[in-house]
Length: 123
Image (cartoon, rainbow, N blue to C red; front, side, top):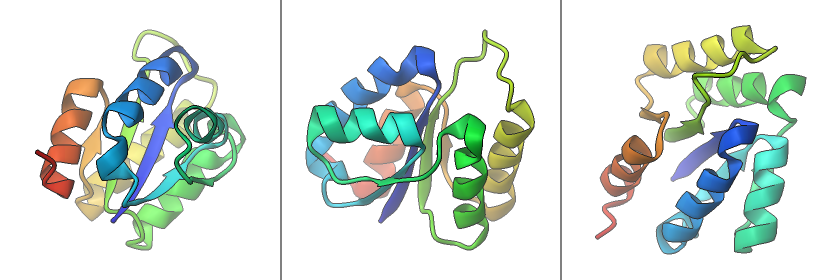
């Protein structure tokens, strides 16, 4: 199972907490991340991640391309809906390709918990 993990700056702590809470299940997955999020996850949880570029530097588009190629099974994208992002077109493209390719997408911790439970049958 290949899971993409992305978090805006204001939600990186929540992402680390989420990954820590699901470390057993996620440890058996291939984790693909944007740059800074991946560094935090690897440093703070010890899980191996495949880091792409930082989101504003093209990481969202790199992960979007993986989704388009069928190489991602689910996406957890903890995004901050209250802060404007300079790379908003990239974010919109990532969300759109998830819809087009029918890839499960979680954009908050509650839906991320359901995504992990559903994809990985975690109990």
